[in-house]
Image 1 (spheres, rainbow, N blue to C red):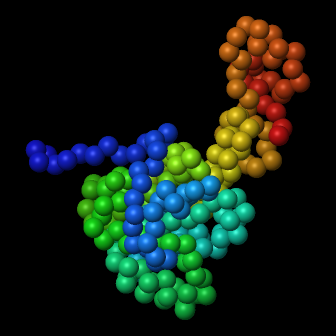
Image 2 (tube, rainbow, N blue to C red):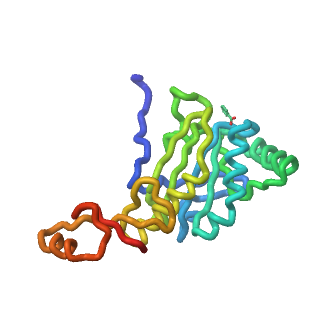
Image 3 (cartoon, rainbow, N blue to C red):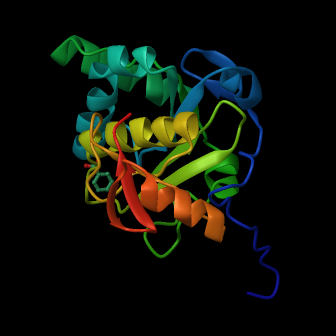
Length: 215
Ligand code: BEZ
């Protein structure tokens, strides 16, 4: 451990570290790509592997959902640009699914290390299955990590995106198992006066600190 530099992994609430990289759609700078949009950046362990193929196809098939919800996708793995292009082409030819979103060729592992996607206890050469949700201001709002042998859940990724957008837009919180259209939690009163107001309100109240409303 003596000579090893330990870098701090980005955490929820941090600004997403900026970078410029080579991708399947050309050079990309994160801060430019981010302008005015949410970004979901996700790593996969390796091209031409089965679970990764199902996951990337899952993201590609949700193209319209992400566009409708102002969100751009950004893939990454520790593979060369030639490998990425060959894989994208192979999946397209075999299944008709085209990965149109950019995929970073992180062959020098710079971005994987910067974002804590390389977790040596799991693999020293392949990124784990990470998902970073970045808001339009460039702030990291959620991080998910999955191991090499368990694929992610697209419904949960979509649910978290909509929950983040809803909580940001309305200054509310989303309870257990929240789904779009469900009631949301309003912030608890912070003064005695606000508590008195809360007691008189029409909110659905379990207790003064746990109150819900429809949007
Ligand atoms: C897969 O995507 O199938 C996979 C990739 C790396 C290790 C294990 C499985």
